[in-house]
Length: 132
Image 1 (tube, rainbow, N blue to C red):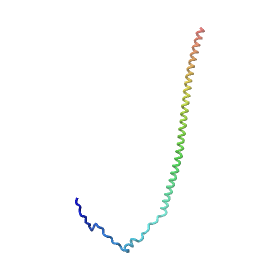
Image 2 (cartoon, rainbow, N blue to C red; image 1 turned 135 degrees about the horizontal axis):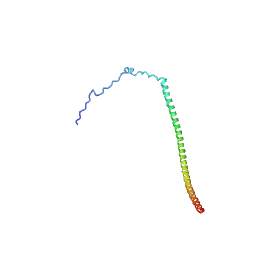
Image 3 (cartoon, rainbow, N blue to C red; image 1 turned 180 degrees about the vertical axis):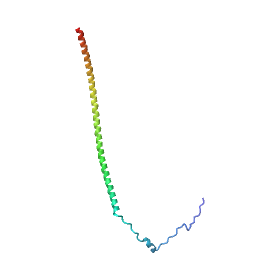
């Protein structure tokens, strides 16, 4: 690639700035009018907003503390309920074992009663046969 010679063109070179005289600067440097002071209503609005935010924060913290306490209470209730349920399951199993044992005893007693009834009937039949 060929490189073109660089020539400074007068239109592209910035001209030196002349220093303005003090009289020309005086109107530019005069004091600007100050902005209007905010009315006290604006400050009141900001204060009310800050107070509202603080109140909202306090309410949120109170609600969080309340929910924490309620959550702990429900957790304790759940643990107590689980312990009671486990105890009831154990008691239920013991009672079921006792019922099964009593039913086995009842079945044995019923079998013995039937055996004795059969022996009595046989003895009665033998007596009647002997009486004839």
